[in-house]
Length: 389
Image 1: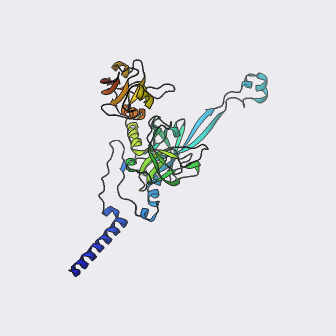
Image 2: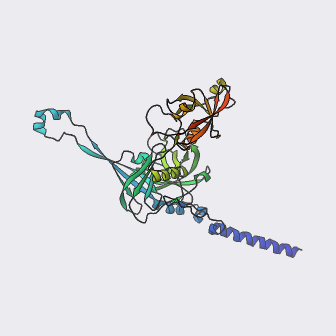
Image 3: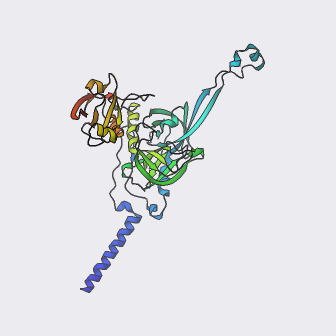
């Protein structure tokens, strides 16, 4: 009996040793890989599930080497004309000094980063990187340069899509930001301060960050990987080198990195990018209401059991909500039977509705629940002043 037990123990030990070697050196043999899913308009690389072997050795060089070729530097220039000097109207002044004080043209330059997202030449970056540019030039990590044209922008997510005419472009693979956890390693790749392509390492510090005042639709990944001026539009990649975010902003009182950076999740960026490539812009649903969150005091005054939902603080005259009978003072508690906790979640639900179609809103009016049918409008471009959702 003891002899059989020894044989069994040795067999188990050998099997465990073989399994350990395979999962460490060749994890691809121990896992199923998902087939790549290509887009209809742009060729998208999907991330695999295998992790680089050097991650077990405390190195992220495989991730960096995989992602760096797809991250580009973006140089923008803007032509500005100085105002005409008032002395130029004086004939005596013009006689002695000529036209040297007349309107002078100058160029201002700025820089940022971007990510090649398809071999067709599409580059994803931030809207604020190219917002005021007259000319845009993209420089690849290998030294190639080319002018870029703007395919379209979306100020409400601070995203823009460019296109360059170059062959053999290295496209990054899209990862799944929803699979990230607090504490996961990430790399920020970009061109901070114009010193050249730079990689910084950190961890995921937070997820689903909103109410930062950076853009209208906020769902940021927070990281302590150093993000500095010039990094905007660059890649945030996971430990396998797959794109999980577009670096967008930092929290800083000095202009330098303080370890609080924010990136737009790559799944949101991908949806916006595909709409821009297909139509040149992003179309969102809109109902024409001004809302505010329900505080505990408001919930008590309205005799509400929770603070979930939003208070309709204003209704745009002639808008979809007014035509559907929505009134100021109503409590919006659901959109197409989907509940939400605050105005940010409500805005995302409304924006996801298809303009021109009918939708059902769940309201509370005089403490009674009611359903309202509404024809969804198209969200207008953002304007200064009071905006209706």
